[in-house]
Image (cartoon, rainbow over all chains, first blue to last red; front, side, top):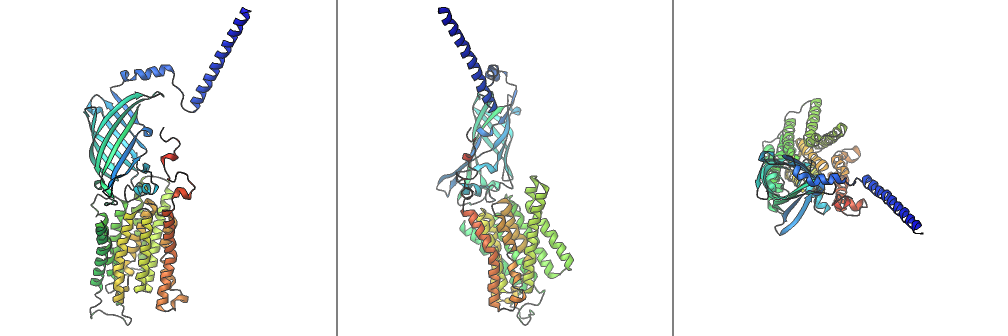
Length: 223
Length: 316
């Protein structure tokens, strides 16, 4: 009786294990089909070890889904009520030990401007402001990067509305982390104040403030 | 800001245009030869309208949007050159009436070059060649049509009525531009209207200055150029553009034998009505486009076209 009971238990365990394997492979297949397949354990180990094995110069590709440029301006001098952000922030940055190895290149899709008000978005895209049909891209290309405390001070050429001017922005390093999909990420945050008329963005001088505060949040994926 | 817009967008263009036209025609001078109807002898000072309107527009544009050396890189700055070219060509055309073939070749070349200048940034961004050719042809064709219609009407029937009809046409264009989401170009259209208004006011006092034919190239290149900027760089509806370009048809339709025999006041009313018949719907279409949100018109749910909330992956 005891032997029969043991056999039944053994069979049950075998079936359970087989079922578990089948279900597990099914989930993995579904995840793979959705483009979210888990990396093997060895890959995770590699990620954890990655910082130690980092190359002398690390190249990052800016993740547009986790990067943004937020802007703020005064409205009729009464408050900071005009605000929005740009979607479609792309580009690259490199981080090295030598100052010459550090570089940033950011490209912003001007059509991606969003303030939450459709008419205002259309107006911002019009020739009154960004003129996105004529100037579809806003770019920043660094010319000099120096370490500054917990971040870097980046000097470069900002091209907005077809006008290129040198600017300096201090980027604070937020941190580095491995994501669950096997990518190694590094993020920076910075603020920049520009005068829009210097870039020929001169629409509604009495309604929209002259100074634009830009908050730049970029997250890069190491290549 | 309002004072600046009024000064540069209305007062300065009107005064300068009127002053220059008076200087060119000197209608008060007893020595000035006039025909029985009081109109100036052909060719005397007829270049004035072109120079006056171009100068009036240039000073308005300069004051509102900056000159050629300003930081303003917008394509609308090309309108400065178009106005200058229109003024020179209009004046030359009045001083030395070239043979018909040469005149048309010059018009075609100037309209084609102006269209290319205005659409150059879009061509540089790539895209189908056929689409670019169609766009350039549309704008150039619009300029050529407006030029010919205004010139034809001004040559055959000058006078205060023509100026008023032209003013109605240009003001309608300015209204369409403002509703196309570009107040800046709308203000430039306002400067053109102000310059034209300055000329028109003079036509009431001195009918001799009513000959505005030489101003046709300035009107055609600048007005149609402004609408082209609205069409290709802002939200000006295509239908509004076409209707505005064709609106001067009303100026020449009153020359049909059936209408040509009517009393002057009736003909003026007809002329204004015919221009309004095409310019009015252009304004109405632009107004509908402006006041009815696109998302609501297309049955959207977010009420904000292009909203990140419409993107299924937004935030992830």
